[in-house]
Image (tube, rainbow, N blue to C red; front, side, top):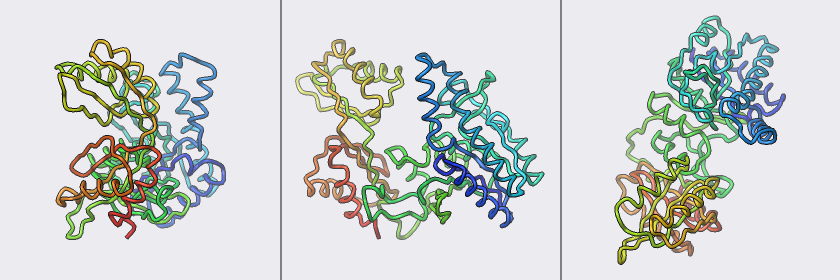
Length: 404
């Protein structure tokens, strides 16, 4: 008998038919002899709809009340899944995040889990019942409802798997696993049967939308085996675990395109101590997440600084930087949303020279200009024009023979 935590995303429970499909799947798992704990996301686009409703009635939207509102979507969905299970004669109990024992910090909108007391979940399992947990929520140390942020249901599931010492954590979504690249951009993208935590962390950090990066970090830190699967085909997906030495380890595992970034350039900044600190401190204080940063070589005490931010933050980042322009000696600030980041990921590149050269040559041969470059031991990222993203993805996917 295996204990498996299964998380179902919004598309997996988007309507009554999908909820019954999930219930049928749990029935099959129970017949196999497995113990199951479910973690359920809000149905379909319900979180977006609740946020739209909040914006229609309030300009202030206090964090406490916003979290109280958003988390109703997951509670509604988990209660409906529970009802569907009862109709199949499967004893089941629904739990809010607080009932499931999730204690968080007091940060509304993106709370962090401090500890889990899963006594009620374990009691339900001991009674041969299926616990159905509302994802992405908990109760703060101040006894307020908190929301774990977008993708928080993945983190809920992984944290429960660690706390309950589950055999595996299955994250069900609308894709059948982790692919070598975005199948919408590359027709010969290939599903990976396995991938390391380090590689998946890099992929999620540079634009791979699923699973949530926080959940992969927790899984790696606590040794939780992840299985990324489809709730529509139920086929075997991609297993995520520790990196294993292999005589034929692939050099590159994936090409990740990301068109959700924008670039800010601060022109002709005084090249003196404290300029970068002043700029990026103001951005950090405003909650702007800066990714790639490039500073040109100084000429006559003057330099340029370019950095990327999420496209959703570009307006705010531009305003902040413009306000600082005079004090840091900049002549002007430009914002460019028409960029894309293209990244190569692969643990094998640590021991194989020439990966960067092949990447740059491939882009050059396709007349694609590189504007910025950043690296890690298992990743190379380039900023290019957004209009070149599809061509770059396909060319690099072919150059590194990822379809094979």
